[in-house]
Length: 140
DNA sequence: GCCAACGTTGGC
DNA sequence: GCCAACGTTGGC
Image 1 (cartoon, rainbow, N blue to C red):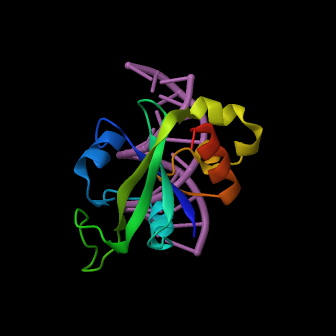
Image 2: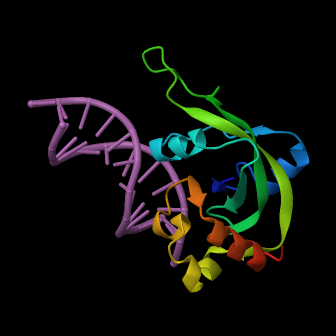
Image 3: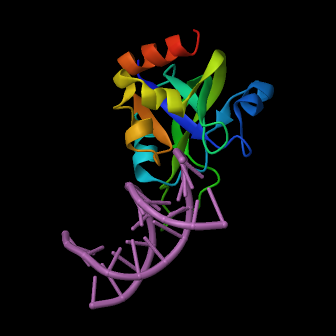
């Protein structure tokens, strides 16, 4: 099983919105190849952190992949072909306390996280070691 | 296929 | 609100 990190601007679609929905959410709107390729690599059951960008700048909970990559219904075709894809995710569990970007930057073992190194990438891989450390920081 | 220009993201 | 970083687009 692999671990990931999903970024969302909370004023567009927040963790609370995902919880309130109580159903799978299509992770549409990603328009970057690196992020799309990460989604293509996902398998059902993979877990991901849910990160609030811009507002909060913190990891607030854990979600899970419930559908593998499929065409993004909000994207236009290019020359009749699908370019952008997305997975479906569902809320699993909130952090007892959010883990902020600032804390992550202060933590030596997390200095290599994509969140720090490639701040613009909206769907990122997370290593198992990073996953465990952040979960502990989040009170899980 | 390269690379300059442009647009967007996201932290500060 | 600014600006740096970086990914994409499009001309050549």
